[in-house]
Length: 412
Ligand SMILES: Cc1cc2nc3c(=O)[nH]c(=O)nc-3n(C[C@H](O)[C@H](O)[C@H](O)COP(=O)(O)OP(=O)(O)OC[C@H]3O[C@@H](n4cnc5c(N)ncnc54)[C@H](O)[C@@H]3O)c2cc1C
Image (cartoon, rainbow, N blue to C red):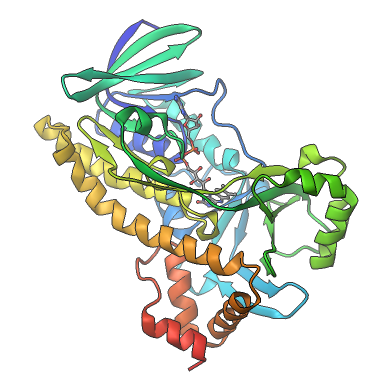
């Protein structure tokens, strides 16, 4: 690698939004460098993730759903919410949405990334550099003019008309830009497990909500299930001190059907830990630089929209960058259109995530009662159910109005 190179767009972080932005920019004839500090690409967390209809549409238009191995993904339409130790509260059915995006796709992030990575590698104009850590920004006067990277122990400089920070919730690019941000670490995160699919496990996802207790069980391809279990951040020693058998017994008590899957759990090293954070930066854009994905708007995973929002960022930013390149202007003002297009939607979803975390994760019996009542109202009231579905599926920006909330609570 030369010590000094020049590209049109330097994208820091090789997540899904970054990859799609690279493809879209290259299709317009731009030279793009995608830089990721991990030598063999982003680490695959121990989890399945939901691709929502909005994300599916973007990937499908780029032909990136075609090559997915059928045995490693689950097309899931129905999610059943149960009260722990109690009745089913509501079923959310994506099947009522308009085809062809009337389902969710549940898969390991690496499964969905694989065709995207192949496409990046074979697309002229795109260079993906793994094991390449961005350690600083190159500045020209007040504006960002590139990045400083360290790769194979060598420090290099990559000049770019625009630098895109797709480098995650802790975003070193955001820090280097000096953008002040509100970063909220939720008090609860998730223990995650991928286990063999128990016999008879159907195509639907299941959520169980209780008193500061949530268990999710999702199908993950033909042979696996993905489990996530709410747990207080920093409290893993208490879990491990109680022992693996106690953990398995608790999960089995919530959903006896997963007992055969839990037989494959033999050590804590199989149990992942996922903290949850929300990030609200003062600005998403600076002179010569812009943030996408979690760097711009990490949100609570209850909404299952983080990756899908990163894909929407890519599409919006590509359009804005096209006009910036036309006039050769990458100032904060020129890039601000991207933030104006995208931030309001991200805020709606971040607020939804906060509300979900407040009501779903609660240990307070009264708030839990309200949560269960709202779930039950959604089960009875189709418009309420559809409105929430459209929001979570990424097909609408309209949260519940005051009237919706009154209806949900009063059962009108
Ligand atoms: C428990 C949990 C469940 C979730 N479930 C879902 C779900 O079901 N659906 C969904 O849509 N979203 C879900 N999310 C959110 C989703 O995982 C994130 O929104 C998504 O990964 C963000 O992608 P990103 O590309 O912005 O950042 P990241 O995936 O964090 O990628 C950032 C990349 O930047 C690279 N990087 C960082 N610093 C540097 C540097 N200095 N130099 C070079 N490279 C660097 C990293 O190596 C990394 O590859 C979930 C999140 C959690 C915590």
